Image 1 (cartoon, rainbow over the protein chains, first blue to last red):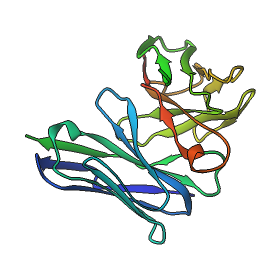
Image 2: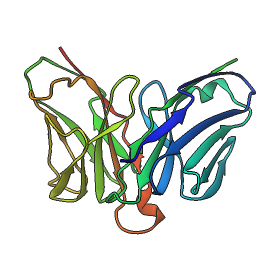
Image 3: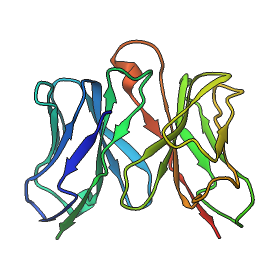
Length: 111
Length: 116
């Protein structure tokens, strides 16, 4: 059974700090998503990756397939980055693109 | 604008009543999904459909039913058999087929259901 674990569960930072959220998973995967959920509940996909590294603005996502580990980095954090960040994997053995989700990391960035 | 719509955003029902949550997409995606989210827990898959007129149970299908009569629509019925129906429900869709593009998943805004 695929398990996805995130750390930390909660993270509080000061504006401008560099932030890292970690995700580990237990089985081989086709791809991994990083999602952002704001207090209203809607979810936005930030990245989907299956190898290497992707960058979008101040956000960077990396994945190490051998170690079954991914990280999401936020540079120069801002209060508007406050949200829940969710890691979700697509295990190799599943049909279609069924996702297995981590429990999320609640990020609060204070001004 | 292409996207996924869910309505309503908030829904209130009395215990014992069935309720149907709407999910519509105009992305021409083959696959659609229903997830449930409870406070402090990760999203869990209720049902999914990879093609019209076909659907499969997810991890927590008991007390729910779905239909997929049209490609763009995947309504979820929360029946009176669902013991703890109060939750946040998210619908998602993805292209089907091969390649990296098929792994993209797009989410609707969600429906918060409260049953009293």
